[in-house]
Length: 225
Image 1: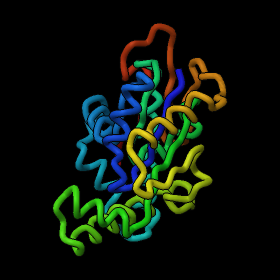
Image 2 (image 1 turned 120 degrees about the vertical axis):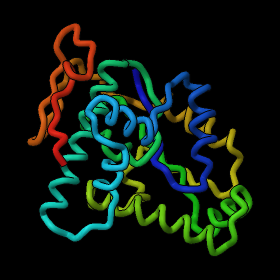
Image 3 (image 1 turned 90 degrees about the horizontal axis):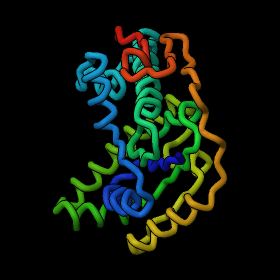
Image 4 (image 1 turned 135 degrees about the horizontal axis):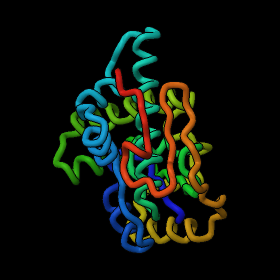
């Protein structure tokens, strides 16, 4: 079954968009927090360790890059294991959506974007932030997203070429935006979902035996980072 992925751009009502689309498209929601929780439960890696390895400010040294790549391999493996062991359509929401290409077929990738000034106004209205705090919050998110996509894809996070559909919020109505996304999702052409496609990567191996029903059967992974 086809799935949709929404990359996060802070203060563009991502939660509202996901909620509306989940209901209208009958898709399950899967977030960064849920992915980290799955990995922690199944592979014994603390959520704090995952976040530190992926997002910490560290020297540009090969050792740190290797740790980060191993952690990213673990995320990819977990995403494919989740899809294989719990098949069906999902709405993926979070930074991990940048990892879905080449891991899960039938993905429609969406970005809902707005300029900084509009996002600052939304943050002040919705969260009660001062302008200074709102600007700091938004820039911290954008810096984190930028470092993530630059490391993975050598692209800025809001580069339109990374997505199948890009929508500029620009004070549009939430229902209008989600209706448009749902229409484009239903109309999009997708490649068939692969059956038993193995993960690929130098640092771990994954396999999907017939009748496999556990994460240990689905994914053997190097989590020594």
